[in-house]
Image (tube, rainbow, N blue to C red; front, top):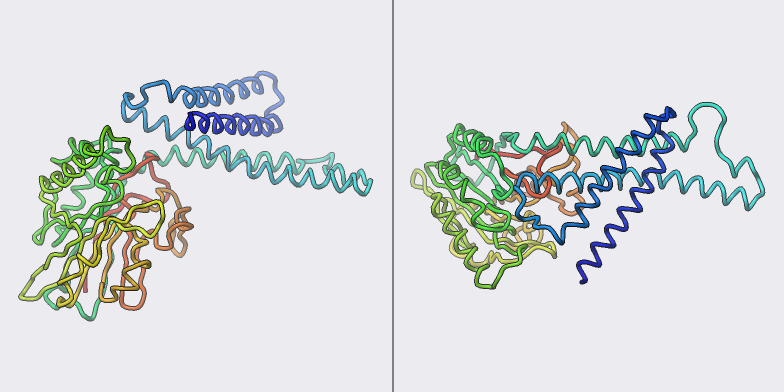
Length: 414
């Protein structure tokens, strides 16, 4: 009942938002009767269909829909909502301005203040209506365009220099990937192209930092054969991310959840990946060694779990001159690693996906996720320690990417 009530509150807000946006559409709509009527009909048909799907969700077997249909329908509905919300912010600015002018006009009995518009040219209200609708429509169009980018894997090459790196490991090539989210995939050939890019690099070592699935181990069924092809002379190592534990699914029993996680661990083993669970391994080359640590998910953000045990992974690694840590959530770096483990030379993370939406151009980067995560994509350095946050191999929720492409990171140690 509580969830049903919340749903109806959301639906009521959406109706109000649709009515509010429609007022702006009436302002800018063409004067030709047929065009105007057609525009109004299209707007309300789309709005009613989207609203109808939301109303029916509790009573339809949404999970039985084909995955691609389910994913895109949800993304379009959410995209419409946020586009209208952004547009409404600009419209509200103009309404506040006009309301303030009206109040001032009444207070001072000044009709020239109460009515603020000229008889010639475009009025400020019409301009703001156009601006709000253009920005909202542009956002929605950009989200639709982003559907084409979800498998556009980009290679990012990073060279990292360390004074304490053993000479035998100079030039070591590491491929770092994260956040596969196989439950979101619907194109095996496209995924294979990403795997082929990794193999073409011929890395010495492949490291995966969590979120193999969205929720269930069965999401990997069609992709085990693909990711099993990943291999490197020094091995493929992995850790768990917050989605791997099945925390976001209503299981039929606590035992089913535990079984799912155990089966997911077996998936890692089947693919030939060495899953590190709060432990470390020693990598040897030319008679010299470095330590590779991997912990379970550990987040400094309240909504994400702290399963990781850094003390267990670290114990015994002290004697090795260079240490790499795989930890899914980048908030772990500032909250614990920087404070308590100053000899961790390089930490590799993922988790944020760069929110799959943002701007990255030379000299400027922005994504909404930066307001939650200080370290959200790329390389960060403080004193002698470095953190690299991978933008994610896969996607979740929104089946696309805008500005922040899926990433394969190629790290060379020097």
